[in-house]
Image 1: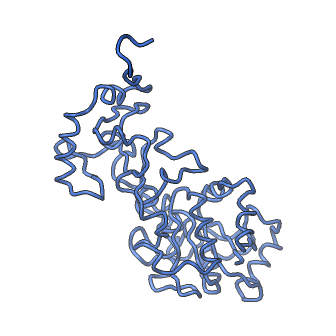
Image 2: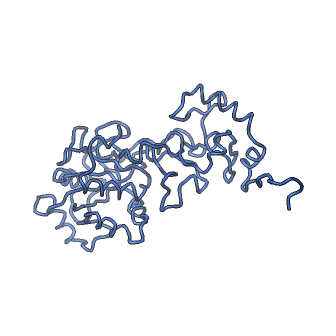
Length: 332
């Protein structure tokens, strides 16, 4: 499967994340092993300048064959729908026009990252850039290509959402498409691959012991659960970050940072500081998706009453209290 990759309005972070894919052979060798070839990528291809423009023009008019169009970064429609806020260098043509022409030729179209999927950071505030995703504008279907768009394969845009993306989410999606093992039923309602979006970031969280006893952190660097006071949305965000850590070792939670739900549309504007938890009558507004609110409130009160001293006191420290000795008498 031949891939043509474009970078629209973004920071390039998704490409940086992709290059760190967990593989001793490197991501390009891993893709090649699955029959995936990069025809063009602005950061990785040898072609540049006029040579790159000629390549894109050939792809757009059908004289250069490719199978999948991957777009990274939000699509800027401004000002006034003209797309002139982002013109592909040297071409004089708005990026959104290139994307429309190439998407019409592609067998598969992928949005790489939450900016391309839903608009992301570029669409925040008053969205003066008129930024949007390929097939969504925030959480609403539409976007640049329209809600009814289907690629040559019959699939809608595949939204590999995340800010940035987990490298393996991209690699696994591309390998599944190349193998013909990916169908419309493999996408959730926001067109994200189910293999990673049918889990919550909370699953596998290293702070689960604190969460279970509702032993909460009070400030950054505390070891306790970040949900009650520090804005963590791991119980509401769809992704397998803690089950399948970045590069085998990392995740926001493992680094001590709250989950900001970057795989969800609208994450860039939560309506409150990222590191704060909005509450009503002392109860967080955003509660876990996988249990009824009344049950959570009742169980939280019960859990707090049963919190072991070691867990309760460790929650507000930056180092855990030692485990109780297994032997009688003073600890050595």
